[in-house]
Length: 261
Figure 1 (cartoon, rainbow, N blue to C red):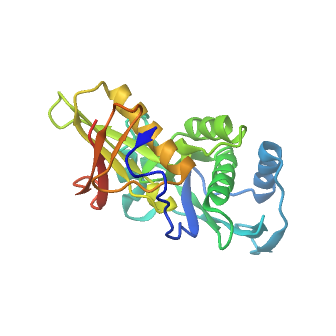
Figure 2 (figure 1 turned 135 degrees about the vertical axis):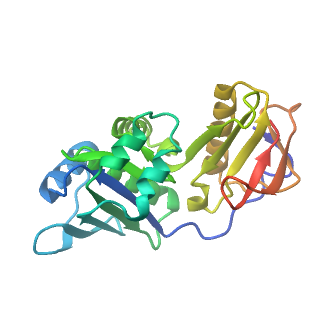
Figure 3 (figure 1 turned 60 degrees about the vertical axis):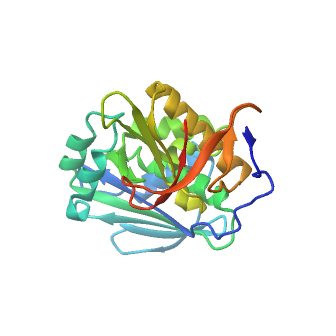
């Protein structure tokens, strides 16, 4: 990756302290013993409960110096949030129907005070991945979208087994076309790492090329911990100089970095 005036600039702002997602359920049931067994079998990870309510539907534990809270909410996510978010996932045609039918959800939250954000992110994805193996889990509502269990579980396993950052579990890549001729794409989730989300607007490239390009940029930014700046350029060769422009995003309602691709 070639950049202009980029390599020495680090993001010194404080990353997120809490990761949170919702596991959709077709029945209001949480088997904490089973969940802990799944986590142990999947990731060789065990933890001691620090507290548990009487009906064992809320678990709080210390895991590697971070506080994990898993809570059963015996009702759908309020305000049709899951249904609205499901509409953004172009990869899963059945996302909206699954979201409409969920009867309850599990709140998974990980509070991190001192550990590197990458370590917290990996642990959080491990916990959520195992939660999705519970008998009544149907989807995960996270990153402003709804993911299919198999997609989330496989993406986690493929990367975490190699101790790599599970980017597809932590950043959503959306894509759309306003005119049917060009392709636009965006990221959602970079703010967890105190990075700006990125967009490619009205590109003439193939949709797969656009998504692969954006994925590679995200991987570079997160793995190298760099801070892209308005007015700089970025590219995959010495000759390639793609402009970076800070814009007011019309789709995310926040400032994003538009990359000219």
